Amino acid sequence: MTKKMINWKHIQRKRGIHERRYNRKFRTALNKLSAPIFELIKNNDFTSPEDVDMGFELILLDGNIIKSVYDAMYVDVGLTWIDNVDKLIQKNLFTENDWNKLLLSAVEGEVAERIVSIVNTSRNRAKKLIKKEVAEGIERGEAIRDINKRINRVVPVGIRKKNKFRALTIALTEVGTVQSQASFIGAKQFGTDVIKIWNTAPYGFAKEERHNKMNMNGQERRMDEMFDVGGELMRFPGDPRGSAANTINCNCVMTYKAAV
Image (tube, rainbow, N blue to C red; front, side, top):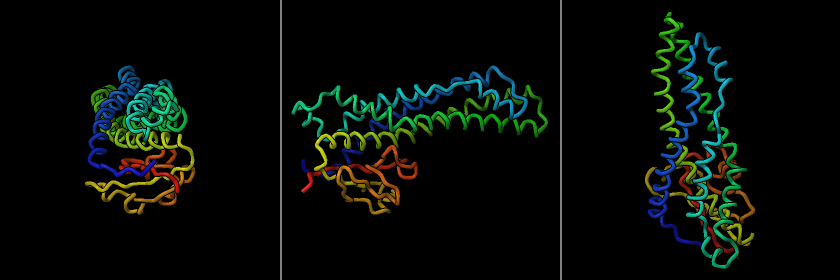
C-alpha cells in the first residue's frame, strides 16, 4: 500500500454528487419525521405554553425514518469511498456483502447517537416555535382561536424551512464522515502496519477551514493511534465520536501508506 496523490477536484466533484443526493433524502426524511407534529397542530388548540408540552408528550417521532437514510448512505457512499476495496475483493478477503455488514454496523453503533440528536432537535425546535406563537398571542390579547389559526399557518412553513437548511448541513457533514469512516474501515483490514494521514482541503473557503488553522494537514498516525484535533482525540476526519465543532462541514480526507 502506498500513499495516493490527492485529486481534490475529483473528490470535490464526487462528494458534490453524494451531497446533493442526500441533501434531498434528508430533507424528505425530516419533513416525514415532522408529520406527527403537523397533525398535532392541526388537531389541537393550544391555550398556553404548558398545553404545548402536554401535546408533545403524546406524539412519537420515529427515528427509523432518519436511520433508513443513514443505512442507504453508508452502503451507497461507503462502498464508493472504501480505500483499496477492489484489492481486498480481488484477493477474496471480502465480498461486497461483507462490506455492507461492516458499514451498517457503524450506523447501528456509532451513528445511533446522531440519529437521536436529529430527532430530539426536530422535537425541541418545533415545540419552541409553537410555544413562541402561543406566548406572543396571549401577550397581545388574541383569542385562542386566532392564535391557533396562526400556528396552523405559520409553524408548518417554519418547520419545513428549518428542515431545508438542516438537511443541507447534515448532508455536507455526514457524506464527509462516511467517506473517512469507510476508507478507515477498508484500511483496517490490512492490519496495524498502516499509517493514516490527515489531509486538509486546499480549495475555496476550505483554505480557512478550522483544521487548516490547527495545522492538521499531513499529520500521520498508526491505525490504532488517535489524532489530537484541537485537544480532542479523533480517529479520522468527521469521526462520529467527535464533537460538532470538529465534524460539521469538515472537508478533510484520509490517505494511507505502509508503515516502514
